[in-house]
Image (cartoon, rainbow, N blue to C red; front, top):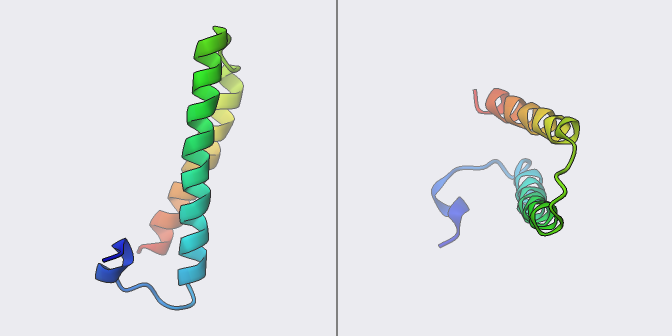
Length: 69
């Protein structure tokens, strides 16, 4: 059973949900690679860059929360 079998997602939304899932999966993997590189090289990324990504993800959460209402 896929994770979508128990929730009702309109057909119009399904390709968008699938695409967002793929993008988020990729983003998590890339973030882990960035973390590994920063640790391996003992060179952290700039805090402003991390804050910028955090703001982008907060925007995603805000949009999805609105869509869930």
